Image 1: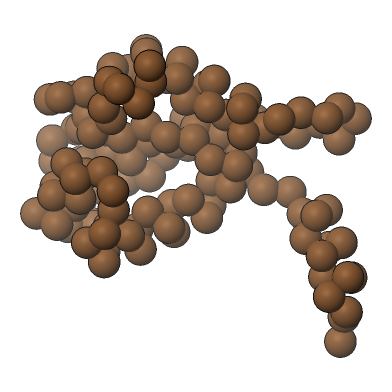
Image 2 (image 1 turned 90 degrees about the vertical axis):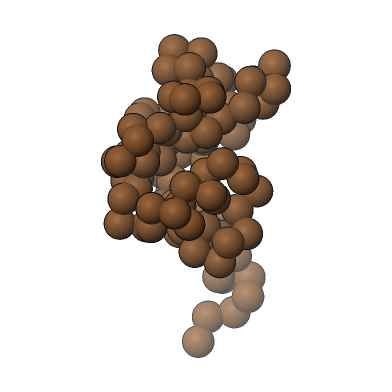
Length: 120
């Protein structure tokens, strides 16, 4: 059995997929754009919150409850390649890319679930 110190070391060396994602309502085509330093975990978290009725985005939650999980898809828009030779703030980089995608896709009002105040 590994010690806590060994487990911590293994965890620190793990690589997680980092980038920007969208959740698409396949009935209305509305999208939600977000970013994460763990693209796999964020989708699990969002599904859990949405299925429990506790997601903070009320418009997304309302449509998820109305249309059901089967009518939503999760898509990675861009993944950031990690560079072990540099110290990079990947969270900051992912947020910059998220802002870029939000500005390009304009996922507001009838087109999406994001709020304009989030990108300001």
